Length: 230
Image 1 (tube, one colour):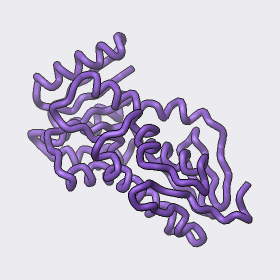
Image 2: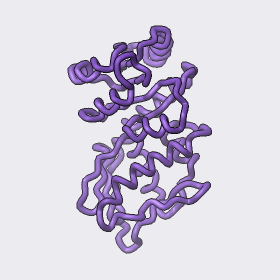
Image 3: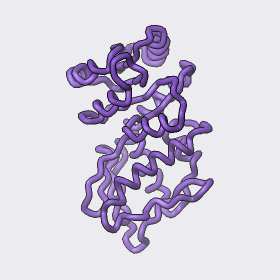
Image 4: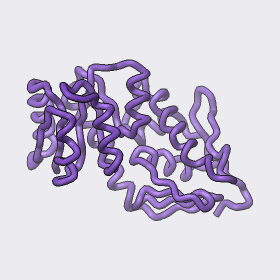
């Protein structure tokens, strides 16, 4: 298992490195303290996951996130002291798979990392076809009508759960358990961001609008045309 830590605080690097060593004794860790160096390093030797601080000395962590997402779908977890809703939403919208606020415990960090990596097991499931949707877990690809939609790892988990429970309400707690392995107070807001992104990707295709319906205070339901369901 290979990790890249993009962080300029040596104490945080040591803390995270110790946690990773506990979770994966054979772990390879590369620490980078400047954002402008990231693209070349990741392109030349892709890791299994990236831990990204937002407060870097040369450029914003958000810029690093956008840069990585321009060429790679590698799992990215933001680790930062910034706990505002605006920052969390921005990070998730730019493609982060998870957002962890400092200070955090080592066991919490390991649990969040394992939740992000859980998608690898999910990818071995068989394709699902229902209504106008065809979903391929192996490639994280969703086809709606004639449109090919590439999904992030978290979006894959969500659409898979909605498809498995089509016509039924999937609660916030169900989705939180699928995504993170647990429920936490800010989970509904984070899930709303993921759903918003999914809708933007899906609903630009004619015949694919209004498929994900909000159930206020409860969760979401995937409403597919009955005549086309398989």
